[in-house]
Image 1 (cartoon, rainbow, N blue to C red):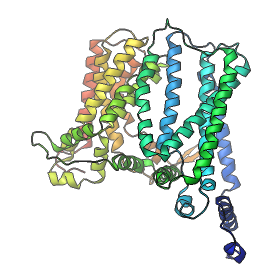
Image 2: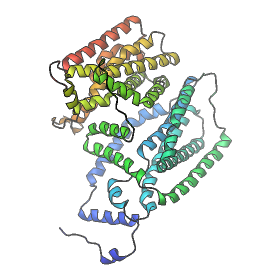
Image 3: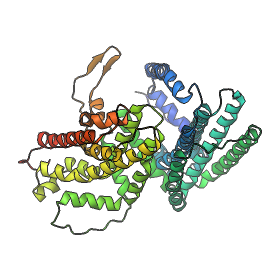
Image 4: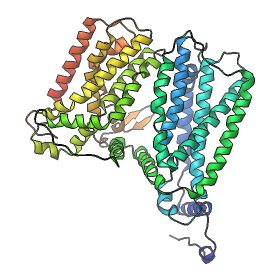
Length: 504
């Protein structure tokens, strides 16, 4: 194989910039062989076209109903739009947002190339993504709230405002990434805003939803756009002195997620998230009491150390009430997903027990005793979350009167078992035979891993049907749901564990 070498003039000339280095690397890769084949481009384009053709009409009917929403639903839509904006800020903060590819991080970042040219492509990707999300959120709000006689220019002005607002949020996240102390203060903003959005979602329908007068919409969009342009210019100029340290952790995190997507092996991501959560947090050791099993005390210590997450979970109980105007299955799914997230607060320890059981073996605990102890904290958290969410849902939605809080309490253990089985699912089984379908052949391992524990929800049919609007809850149905949850928990403990074998 012939090798392409750099000329001596290129080595003795002035120091190249980041653009020249990237162009040089692309040329060497092209000389070694094409990295992107025509078949890959065709498959990706065909997949996107089929997805748009299948999901496009459904999304259009969901985002743009025949009539604009009215009454309490208008406040709920307004709250959802605000939550989407804050969610964009949270996602940007969790992603970095400035990230480099790991080859750039390892080879180009330490070199004496201009820092602005190295980081400018990353900043461009962030700004384009944030502007797209902002424009989509703004257009979704116009489609939901505006009258059908609204002029097309109004939608354009709102799209411009949303795109410029997304750019400003992205630049705010970039500034927070550069200054860690200021970024920690910025992270407290969602904690303050989310309760306000919950109050907006539950507002009195007699109050009129505020709007922007049509004559003022154009100047507002131009002002936001001008602010975004000025802030972008200032940020680009400041990239030359951007420090190295804030770039390493986000770049490795995004690279690990891309590896999981490429290898179809997402099972190591929870461990990555756990290590990232506890990194740099001061921890103190305390002796355990002999009154309770060690796994229960361990879970209680985790709850004490995750007080902030418990606050987030308490605020998230408003989510099912916000989507109460949607289809019944959506409301039931919101309650189940929220309960699973609440139960997952302590399930990192369960996942570690399955991977590294040496400590539990030293304690002399069997697998059944360990799982019976590990399910206590998730069951309590899930039951409390489902009960509170169902209570708020009944108080603000169109559900018939009944003991919804008891329904939530009875549903909690089943959701907790589902989350625990999900946490113990382990690695993706790549040894399973391929499945032939009319659309092609696929490996069932990732799908089975993704749906692990979902079959446990068969013990939650009464509660899910009630949350979906099939029937109103009665104390008889609550007793049936409680019995099914107890039966599902007992069956799981008896069939999936062995009381004689040590913890594995």
